[in-house]
Length: 176
Image (cartoon, rainbow, N blue to C red; front, side, top):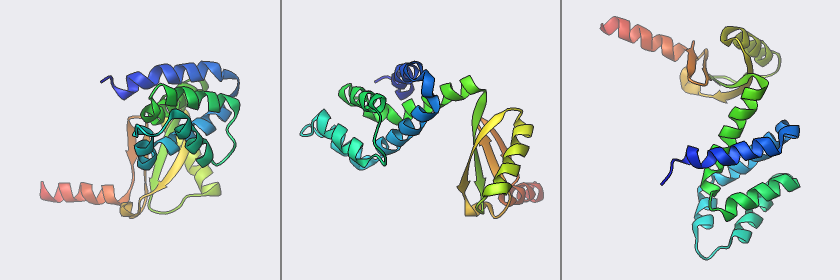
């Protein structure tokens, strides 16, 4: 069986080229479809030999929060009919990477013990953009076990200023 990334790449590239005029709009619906496709119950339904591709399409289109544009409906039909529904989350990730490469930005996940919103998030984002030297699309995820501070992941780079990380460093220093 081919790697999921290998399967997803041609779909992501074709989607990127076909929707080049509205990448932001496409990113919204492709992320929504990927989230729906990641549901294990839906995958169980899609894998059932008793369920047709049209029925899987109807379920996914019905679960979507908004009405899907024609491009999304056509793309979803193609993915389902080719038996690639399991690759949809990876297709979305590769599409996002292509979109980011074109705009010169990167995705950043900020893990924080407490919610970061509004002006504080804008301030953190601006500081991180200076630190990493590029435009960042910042998303915040709560991780109470960090105790305080933040942990930032941008691609394969990690910046950890959390209290948990500092305590771990102190533990290593004391036991060495």
